Image (tube, rainbow, N blue to C red):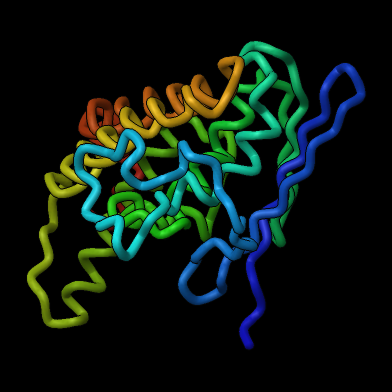
Length: 231
């Protein structure tokens, strides 16, 4: 059996409260490995404020896979406000990251992992990013990583005898669909919390995601000189 990939998030609050979460991913598929709750909350039902572009059917998937996997974490953050200060420590096999930030900023990358590894067919397009997870990434870092991921996908398509698209038009469409999921999933989270930490963490993630296709062309023109040796 191949070794699992583990990404650990630790939240240290000024009050002394500490919250730990270990995201365990299958080495081959990057699917999130979690114990299934016997009775997920009602807001996790697939047809509860179902995403507009969701291709899943409730007969095969009675629960939204992302909501089901996020339910326990949402419960732990339901009484927290988004602007509360926290120190977040992220540990991967390769290195450790740490940042003093707000709850909404610190929770966003954890939500991002869960959304892309839980089996949502829309969010699956971003799953390769999780293998090389970079918490607290800047917009420039994210654009570089996203463009690299997308173009590598085209390379694999060519290797499989398919017709690749060597431009970023398809990436913009991916982000359009991801934006719909983010928007509609936020409506679910409003039913999962008394305060705003969960919702604003997702809103923060979505705002960042919306900026990627808008800024991609400018950034790629800006960094083109870096590739002079190849041109």
